Image (cartoon, rainbow, N blue to C red; front, side, top):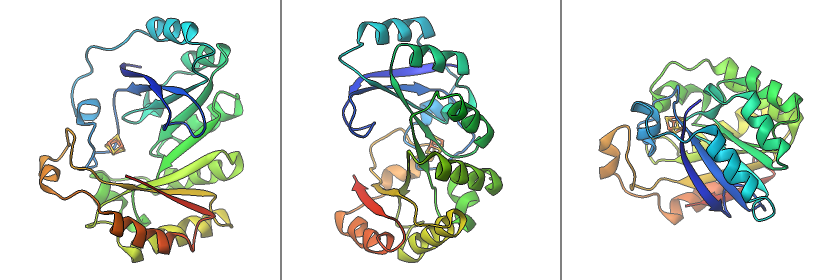
Length: 233
Ligand code: SF4
């Protein structure tokens, strides 16, 4: 496990909590619009030591109450022992995931080491390979969705780009998740694309930011398929 970064305080990453965010190196997807290319495609360097992070969290007890673990794809390398040490300090833990490691997620949830999960839904089921730039095992994605149905403390989210996500695609995502779960999924966020970042595919620097109108139009469709829909940009 290589910890690339620490955001010491965030009010927006963990709903309703004051959190710190840890960034872990590595990802098994290659989304062209990924703005964390350093975490995904470059060799891990300048990492924090686990003890440094734990000492920081120990000192901030009472001021912070949650830790968000993101990437990259944190479930590739996150260790159970590290998570347990964070929980032993009394923190709530949120995991961000692309949904490719259901067995590890289930194990961590069953051991009481995870309190909230945010799962990326990259696009409609048919578009996963093209959006992520790799051959995706969609069974893993669906297994993660079903684990979250049982877990209940989750949100799904999609970073929206006009080339991949129109109303029909959002409808397709909504129907896919609803059919799998047998109910309207609880929380869904439509996230805007911003062209600032160190993208995996530098062509994304030339694209336009997602507009407010585009997101609001997508939300009108998503409202039919999810219990609550939010917009972030
Ligand atoms: S956007 Fe997320 S899933 Fe895609 S390459 Fe970047 S870190 Fe991985």
